[in-house]
Image 1: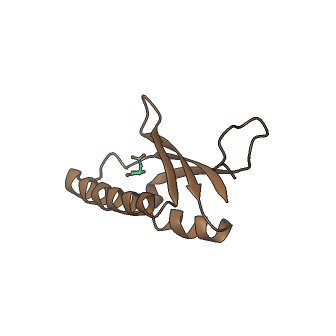
Image 2 (image 1 turned 60 degrees about the vertical axis):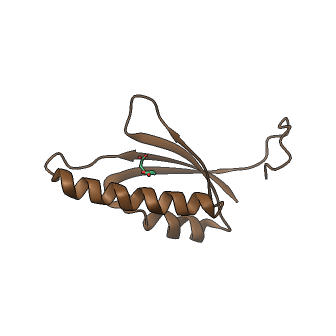
Length: 96
Ligand SMILES: O=C(O)C[C@H]1C=CC(=O)O1
């Protein structure tokens, strides 16, 4: 199942820089592992914002919840999720 996930990061302004850097490093490693597994299909920065638009390919809602809630930045993000389905005009056969 495909999901569009929009994440906006809101780190506390008083968070020490080294704490933020450590969380971001863990987030990057986790995000890259999920991309390697094919579960995090697309990851795009929203220009001008500390936010991203992502496409996840997971078995079901429960797996998406599990993956997202384990993001190291999860406590500091506003997240919006939308389920996707194939567009009838799409020429991409791998869209599901
Ligand atoms: O930077 C972000 O958009 C937040 C988060 C998503 C992937 C990652 O490495 O950090």
